Image (cartoon, rainbow, N blue to C red; front, side):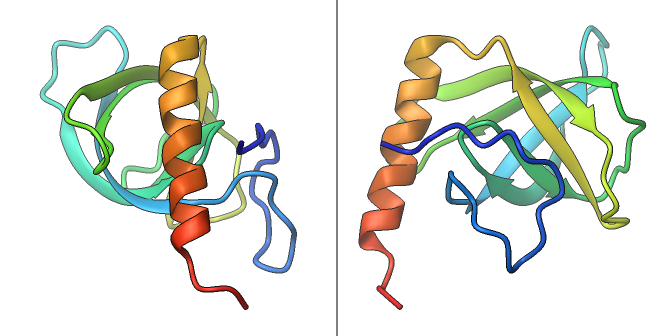
Length: 118
């Protein structure tokens, strides 16, 4: 099973405990009545990253996404992390329900098993 990755802003040559897979997210500030804005990015077990909308570290977000392997939309809360990457917003999931974490872990494992071996 994929393991939790608590690193923030890893460089391409660093080894990750959790793979990252491309994903489309809907994002808004937590507690706001604003519309969710679509963003392309990537998903890992402990969080996600998406392009655009650079937000200040510590900002709380609501993130929605649907895994291709399922039909249920996941909605999670996250916190923006400090990052040296000026093009992406990195988010750590907060209080991720166990069933959502297991669903994400299974999907990441399936994607990693399906990826061509190097």
